[in-house]
Length: 128
Image 1 (cartoon, rainbow, N blue to C red):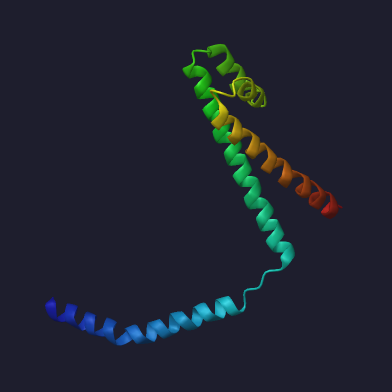
Image 2 (cartoon, one colour):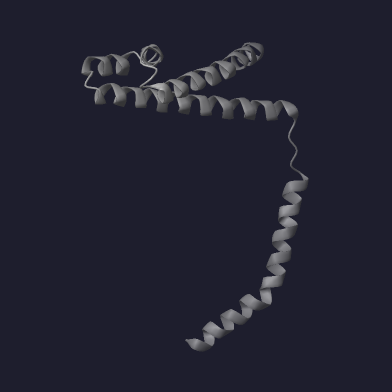
């Protein structure tokens, strides 16, 4: 068993230079042939910004519901769960208690709007 293990180690040591050269050449070819246009870059940027906006809005919405339930406003928590745009109004009315949630909601909403408008025009342009 030990002899086969040592032979295996010798094979790995012997082949390590070859595999390193092979990996480097494959990586170089992949990078060399990879090009991205500005149009593709803008699409990726809009998708990333939109997903960050959705995430911020969702986290702020959930924090607002938990804050309302923590203040023993159970009916308001249920209303915020059903009608989530009202969570922005709730945070603005209770800004001293919910400033963190309000900032998350507003920034998330602005990011979503900034990405939805260009996406709408892009989809309208490509639709047949």
